[in-house]
Length: 241
Ligand SMILES: NS(=O)(=O)c1cccc(F)c1F
Ligand SMILES: [Zn+2]
Image (cartoon, rainbow, N blue to C red; front, side, top):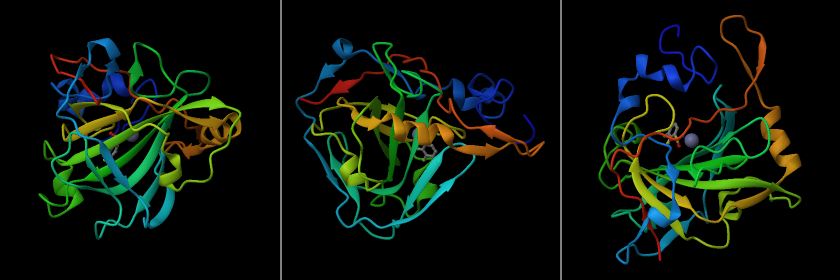
């Protein structure tokens, strides 16, 4: 792995990230395999409140590891609160993880079952921290909403995150990390139980994304950009009512 370059290939993939990012072997790493009947229903978990109404997306880019849509996070227009969160968390970006085919591609799995893709909406605690950068290294700095995508014949209307939400906001929640280097253990994970349906055409588009291989500048297919489930290490997974 030259410098701190990391990827999803044989040499620079998830099994070698620990060399440059020792926290990869930490006690609150993500993703995990979620086993529904081992999750504890927690009455204290209030409803999730998601407000993306006046969100303003800034750009969409291919950062070499995923396709990312950035948002203007200079105020509280697009926030998530409630559920396991003590403060409102501001939407910063969303991105996807996907596989080459079928039920491989999500990062979290449910009783060992994967989905074709997983959408991550990344939010930060702007009440306690001044910048996203500062929040990204704090144990309660980030909240990531994970939404499974499964292939079907229906379409989804563009990338406005508001219409990317499934009908039910029931969720699992646990304390974890970024799933890509630097793997900071700073994420309160909220994974929705109900997947959203995307068309094979949309999934095909994700799989079509290319990224350049820095060294030999040859086009490589960017797919299978998902980290496998990590050890639970005694963590509790809670379930909303
Ligand atoms: N895959 S991930 O949602 O854990 C993630 C990745 C990069 C930066 C982040 F802030 C982040 F949350
Ligand atoms: Zn992600």
